[in-house]
Amino acid sequence: MRNFEDCLKNDELSIKLRKSDRTLYAAGVGYMGLAIWSVVRLFLAAYIRYESIAAYIAKTITEIVDDSNGSIDESLAKILLGIIFGMILFFGALFVAFFLWLEVFIGLSACKESVGKKKGVVYLVFAFIMLAFEILGIYTCVETISSLVYGVDPSVFGNIGNEVGVDELEVLVATMSNAIDEALDSFATLLLSITSTIILLELIINAFKVKGLRRKIAAGGKVNEH
Image (cartoon, rainbow, N blue to C red; front, side):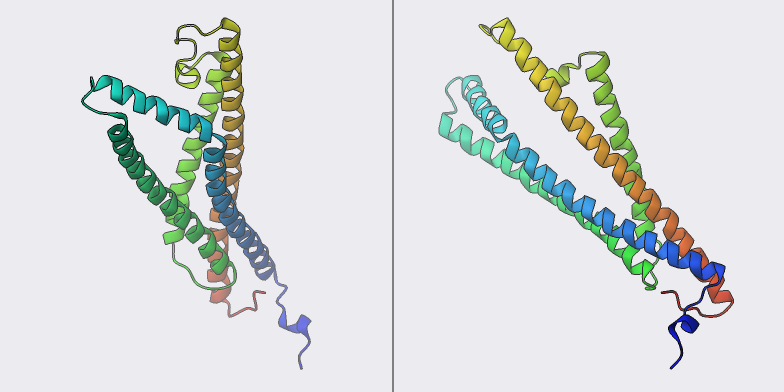
């Protein structure tokens, strides 16, 4: 039986290939992990903001009834709003599921590429598209944080204080609480987007390295890559 060391190629190209393979595999696993965490984080955010969502729904139902001048009662308003929210949730779930599938496809393809299974460039095309989305997400988060630091963004603070009879101190506390929550959420999203961007860059760069090194090695004969 030949010694294991004799079977393992230690030329420069083979060493570089093994290193790129390991990095590509780690990037693939990491990107799939982040994709799953993003979905979990979305559900956690919805759970945490359940009371706010419920209050918004109740307020919307009241507005629908008031604006209808009696032609729509509360039961019918609930049904109409339920249909609208049901459609939003359905298409939102499809949207989330599609991006989750896309991110898992990219990560899984990278893992398969790293262990020697030939993959095309389709997953890399998708990786570039997702990279563009991540960069756009970083820009959006930075813009939101800048608006909180350097100025008041009406879309962030909403209509706090517009209601009659609200104490000024309560308005200030509510405004500050809302701003802090928005800032923390934006920072968390920014960190997640930056992490995803770094992992995607590692994935893309090492995928091209692996493909290039395999072509060079194939030109000089087969090699035991792992």
